[in-house]
Structures are given as C-alpha cells and as structure tokens.
Amino acid sequence: MLCTQCSMYWTCLREQGPVYDELDEGLQREFQMYIDDRGITPALGEYLRHLIHDKEEREYIAWLDNVKKFVEK
Image 1 (cartoon, rainbow, N blue to C red):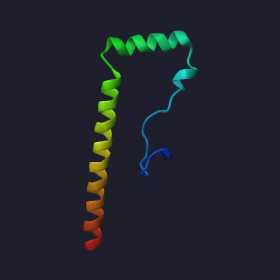
Image 2: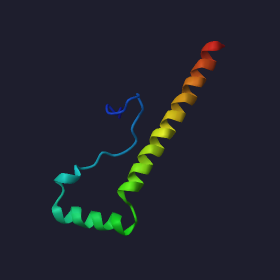
Image 3: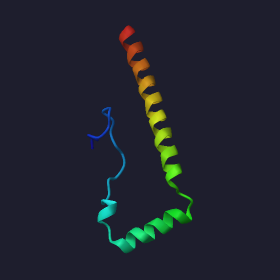
Image 4: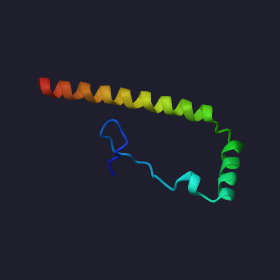
C-alpha cells in the first residue's frame, strides 16, 4: 500500500487499525492502563517520532547518494 500521508513516496508497512476515539470507552480505558503499566508515555512517543524522522532522512540521503553514484557511471 502506498501511503498518501508520507512526504516522500515510501511504502507504509504499518496496519492502520481502528480510530481510537471510535472505540468503546471501556476498551479505551483498558488500553490506556495497558500502555501506562508498560511505561509508554507521551514523551516516549515524541522521542520515537523524532528518532524515526531522523532515520528516514538518513536513509533518503543515502538513497540520493546511491542514485548520484549510479548516474555518474
């Protein structure tokens, strides 16, 4: 599946799943307890978001370098 939300044309490998706000309130509460018990915090989510963005940028730059080398042959 091609992700239309990505700034670059990368294939998204994640499953979209249901909209959280549309889940049963009891299920939302249980899920929140589940992630709280495992120490998953908004700060961790923000850290991972930045980490993933950095990794994607590094991979894109490496890809551009490979394209440059190929074109220069």
